[in-house]
Structures are given as C-alpha cells and as structure tokens.
Length: 287
Image (cartoon, rainbow, N blue to C red; front, side, top):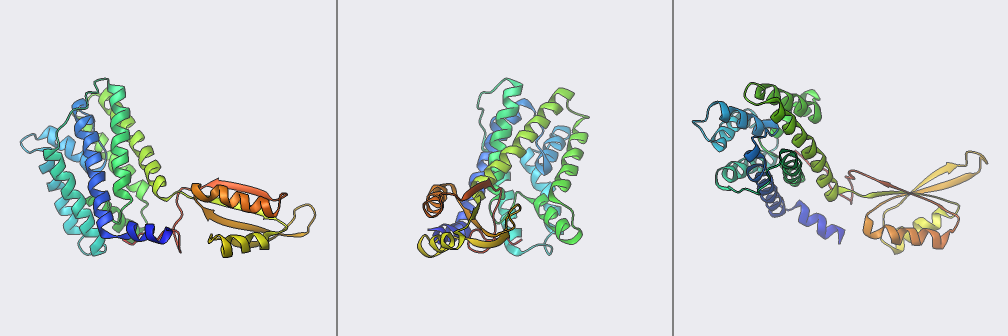
C-alpha cells in the first residue's frame, strides 16, 4: 500500500493536479476575501498587488506575469528542467485564475477576513509546495540562492516580505499593513500544517529487554520498519537495547499492541515528526 501511494504521489499527473488545486484554493483566498479588504499578500504576488495599486493601467494578473518573466529567464539554467517547468505551470495557473476567478465570500469584518484569507491562502500554498514544483519565480530564485550560496528559504522570504510591506507603507494605512501581517502569519502557520498532513509520521522509541523479539515481530511478520540501537542503563549500567521505528497514526496502535504483548514492562515513547523523508518512507524532492 505504501509503495502504491508513493508511486501515485511521485507521478506527474498527481503533482499537476495538486498544483492546480492549490493555485485555485490560493486564488479563492485572495480574490474571494483578501482583495475585498485591500490586504497585501506576501512574496511576488504581494509585490504585484502593491505595484498594481500604484499603476492601475495594468491588471494584477498582468503585473504578476511581468514580474515573473525576468526571474524565469535568469533561472533557466539554475535548476532542473522539471522544477523549472512545474514552477512555470504554477505561475501560469495563478495568473489565469487571478484574471478569471472572481468571487466574494462575503466576509466584511477586517479581523475575520485576515484570519479566513490567511487560512485559505496558506492551505493553497501548502498544497503547491507539497509538489515537485513551487509557487512561481521566487521559489526558483530561492532554490538557486540556497544551492549556490546557502541562503535559507526562511531568511530569503523574510527579506522579500519585509521589502514588500515596506514598499506598501506608501499606499496603505497602518491598519491595513497590520491586518496583512496577521494574514501572512496565519498563512505561514497553515502552510506548515498542510505540509505536515502530507508527510507527518510518528517516531517511536521502545526500551525493552526483549528488543530483538520486538524487532523480529515488526519487521518479519508485520512488514514494519524498525532499527535496533544498543544502549546501557544509566543507573544499573546493564546493557539494554532500544527499538526505533517510524510509523503513522493508522498503525501506531498496532505497533503499541505488539510491543506490550511481548514485553508488558517496556517503555514506549511516541513523538510527532514534522517531516520524514528517505528510503522507503518518502522520497526526497529533487530540484
């Protein structure tokens, strides 16, 4: 089952579907809520919003397209062709949806609008970032800067968003800027949460005097992954092994039952992980 799910998640069709769905959700959040409150989103889309307010002769979708073009030209040889074209596709989808998806979700309270738009846009961004592409030209630049100069993604986008908000101060009231910052904060939190939904696992540590039997049961009979780590008791100094395993919510209860059926005196520790990548669990994204 895991291999089948991984095969689907690695397929080009699934990645394109997820990107299209994420772009649509993002635009619903902006056009349906944030645009009616004149909020300023982050990154390149936010810059396009501010420039469009200064120079309204061009539409938002056209400004967004124009800002992306030089970034993609500069990045043509900087990243893999797959990453480049998937980002290009995302940019195209966002541009078209910005121009043609018009709706009003009817949220008039500014605070509620900031919360709702941040949550919806964050969900869209999380879906897009879960693919083998990204959200547009800035994602391509961020990857290049990270690969060549070690610039962290978070630091890069913090600088970009700070520049966008500073630029927006000349055209927006302080109240709008603060509401926009609240929207961006909620968006970033929801983005991280959505990403974790796709990739979160449970890290389990089991300390037991019957660790070898537990590992044999998990790996040979239950088709689960487990690692045996030799250890020593801190007080007694006696050798004792620890079993380390990665699982998900669905199989956590089964793993717990296996452990305590074999050794009722075992110590069973469960930790939430944000992301588990590698080997047979999830493949690492290649840019």
